[in-house]
Length: 230
Image 1: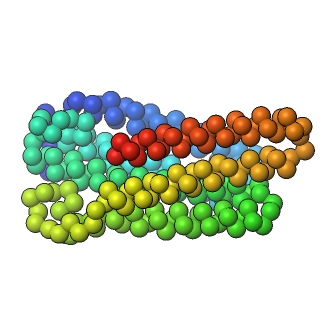
Image 2: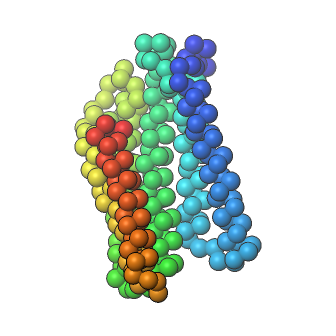
């Protein structure tokens, strides 16, 4: 369906600019990393594979939202043609599913990077547990985005009669809470690695404090977003 000309506007153009700028910048960094790992260091690993997959899913998410802006994403609902609103909501739901799955993929990239540098057995076991549980929960949450109402079209089209049997808000909050724990765990592990390095104790403490502040900042930001329902 061709969107109405008035549906594109509001914050849609700004949203497009931000998303594609992030995608281009991410592409540059990932390309530089992969080139270095493949052709200079000759040490590419699973972390690089998942990083590239993260980039591809980021591009897919940006494409979904960009398509949605043509139908009204970024506009007030009252300013959008009802038919266009349904299409915009559909692209937003698809993008939401891609984004949720991509968050798990990006964590897997970090986890596989940590697996390359840890040397203790319990570190590796713990990281694998994080990868497994995070992946299972992400797949469930991604599927839940689309099957919270049956038929699926009822998720984004309120005019379709269906049965919305799943409270996705509770699923999302549970997943987000666990995600904060995973973020915290994956960020804390390097602290143990730093403590075992041959460095002055003072330097170790300063480095660990710096890492801990980063963990605190990320956790607070994610918790704040969860409370705001985003």
